[in-house]
Structure formats: C-alpha cells, structure tokens
Length: 279
Image 1 (cartoon, rainbow, N blue to C red):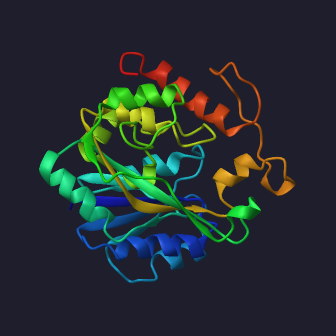
Image 2 (image 1 turned 180 degrees about the vertical axis):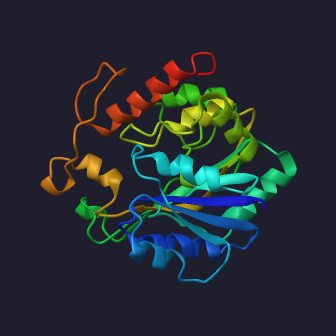
C-alpha cells in the first residue's frame, strides 16, 4: 500500500470529517487506506467515518490519559502505507492530490513531498469580508527539491514562505512523509509530535530533522477549511468568549501571552532542545 491518510479528530465535527473522508475516497489514485483517530470516541463521528462501507476506512478511539495531540502519534502507529499524510478533519483533498504525490515518489523517492493549498471561508467566519469565499495563494507549478535543513531554518525564523524561489508553506494536510522517516523519529525520541503542547506543529521540525530529502510541488492539492469553529480562527479571535482557551505553560519561549505564534515558538524551541544535533 502506498498511502495512509490519517485523520486525527476531536470527534465533535462529524459533518466535516465525513467531507474529509469523501475527498480521499474520490481520489484518482486509489492505493490508500484511511485511518481516523478519534479523541472523543463519539458514535456520531464513527458513523460518519464508516458511512461509505469502504473497507479501506479504519476507525480508532484514541486511548485516554494522553496529551491533546496524541492522536497524531496514535494514528501513525496504526498506519500500513509507505507514505503518510495527516489530513485535518476540516480539510479537503483535491481529487488529483495522491496522483501528484505518486508521480514525484516514483521519480525521486524523497522522504517528504509537500505541495500548496487553497482556503475556503464559510458563512460564519469571524472575518466578515471573507465569508463564502475561496482564497487562492499564488502558485508557480514548479517542482523542485528543497533541503530539509533550509525549511527548518525558515520555520524557526518565522520567514514568510510560499512562491517562486521561497520555502514551501508546509501545511501538514498537503504533505506526505515516508514511513521510514517516521520510524527513524519514533526510534530516536518515541514520538512525531509533542503531545502536551497546545498545537501539533512540533511535528514539522521533528520530521524535517529526520528527513534526508524533500520535494516541493507548487500546485494546490488541498483546501483548508477556515470555519467559524476552526481552531485556527479561535486563536486569532481569542477575545471572544466563545473562543477562549486555557492558558498554556511556556517553558522555553521568552515571550508571554496567549497567542498562536507564541505556541508555535514554544513547540519549535522544545524540539530544538530535544534534538540539538539535528535542529
């Protein structure tokens, strides 16, 4: 099997995850499995995930007592494919995404293949002027090799990425990672994501640290859902009572405050401390 599409979910958006699953089943390249890791273990999510009756779709409840991001590790431990893609439960793969990834894998066999993405803003999005729109990030159509270490440098520097000659934007739902590279991460540190941090972005520098090669395909392969209930929008509108989150402890970052970029920086600095020889 070539691809394992992993969908970590909080189990509270059955309608959206059903859409994500359908987007995978509609791929022009069909050698894949879908692994859903549900933190809540809700019957509604289970029914939505398994509604197609396709035996390539597997549903798991995530063991209790772990950190909020353990669903990323847990789903990876169930995967049987040669390449893994973590698809957020509110994102949508374009129908030729896996075909694009396969072409690069057949030609170059890299540890990582990453591509570009689009955005969809729904009718209750917090930014009123964006409601019911599709956001297209400029793309070039280029296919080029990028050094994983250069991407790590750009991540830690918070460099603006995307576009001709620049670093890829590296959205997880538009990126496939080789099984062998993930095994290297598990063998060295026992994880691919720091599960107790408020964001799952620590797996970007972790996996890049163990990657030997990366290819960037600058065409969109996925639509990011920007919904009124999306975590990404919750961070940017935290002043609204319905989006408030508990404060998170900052152990490495010198910046204080409950902000999305602070959480990212904390994730990256903890990875740097964990892997000083690779990051």
